[in-house]
Image (cartoon, one colour):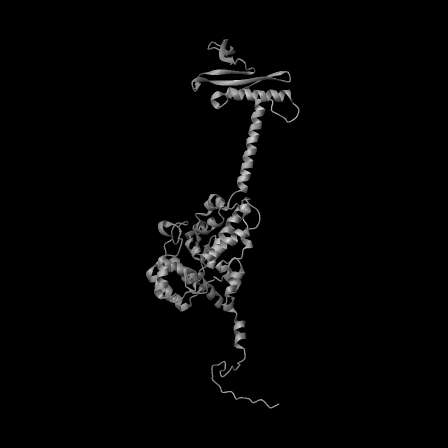
Length: 435
């Protein structure tokens, strides 16, 4: 093994220059083109750490490049192999381009790793399952929102067992038909089936928006049960007076929320999110921010609604008007409301949920009173914050006096022994002439 020193000039304290030995290079017997130096203190295992360099000829030019430290995995064996590759590339320049320098080899290696990483990411994206997308990407963005807990339940109970392991790109209406069959066999309500399919559709649309998948949702190819889930229960003035009076004596906060819904048609969520900055006492209106339709709207207050806020002490602009426990936004109607409904017997003997009285019935009652008072449907739409006029048209029968008048103009027709007025008459029996 041959040794030699590499020296360089260094400046002394007196400003003079001198030559000082710095590195001791060593050649390995029987191995041409590779040399190394040992670190003065650092060791790799039992021997001092070594730094290898590679030397070779290319186009009659001598080249030498650092290969790396032994402690970083750059062994003598690897150096010999890399030297052979560089020599081969230098001696055979034709054909497939090969790196002739270590820097080129490193760049080629980095490019190869980048290609492999991109290909791996592409394959992972293509094979991403519905379950992986829901739990890893979609749900973390919605878990704190209103629908988060419900969607989590749908996924855990029904969606994941049925289609969770299927890649998004392979999901077809056939798979969702099986999901629908499972729900029907479990005797789930039609509305529940609709909710579950809605969750699948929303997740798919989220993936489409993020360019993870393309195409229409496979739910479009599945027939969902059609149901009429619209609530039809409303309160007349006498019932409303009785109900609000009872509430006022039991829970003032719930009474105020119910009053706003009955007189202004506000949704429960809109009332829960009201802040003092949304109240304009001067103009007598409330601003409903980010309502269900996605738009903010002003709603003018009738006198009984205004009186509510004059009874209350204003707080900071950002403070909730009707805060829940811990000052947070309420998630559901407080228990005193349901207690009042039960005490007054509003739902006694009623099994059809559309006819049962709930907080939303106050909003329907407000819409009915607006229409009965002669307010046109477009104005009612704006007051209620409906996204389209079709939602408001359900109340059109209330104001359609033309249809009522038409029914009254139908002639009275005796049927059997009873007239339309309910009087019993004796009809003479006619005899047929003999032919």
